[in-house]
Image 1: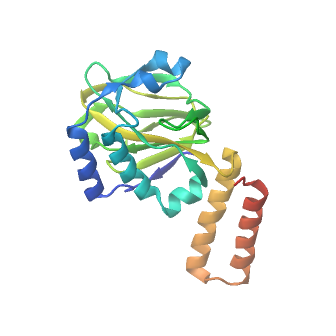
Image 2: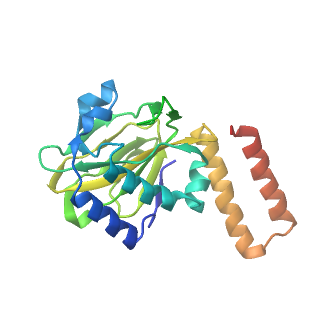
Length: 228
């Protein structure tokens, strides 16, 4: 499932992120890539455990905390701490790759997060750079994603994807992975669709007998499929 979550970061959080990134030191992004991805990766990143990265992490994780649409779609069990990258100049693209299935949390004693769901939070205004589309391959073909600053896209960690070359300006983004309580993308999609339908029915009819029974079906499916 590919899902656009608008306005995850508001103007104040974006302003804070831009102020942090304006003074931040950048390093070669290949240092955090897997063996296959390293050959395709040509960008820059913040050191994952450095202060600027941790400050941006706090902004993103704070916005995700309790966000109903994110929770409904990802059903998070654990979240890999967000990292931050930049595409510009000669370090301007990321070729086709699939994210590592399991990520070791930087600075931890071997803590691992299974990457069921991938996410990108766009930090630069799309008018400020050319190119840089996130291209995700799914069953309906290639989906090209270039969102407003502060918006997030969620997509399956199993997807082949790439970032197109940036030919003007700089593309800034935070990215992260989610280990979901429900490993299967198909099951998460069914639960998300059911949850969204329930919300609309409650708006129209309140908690009548049918919506209560349907909510019970949702939670019984989640009980059947979830690992906590």
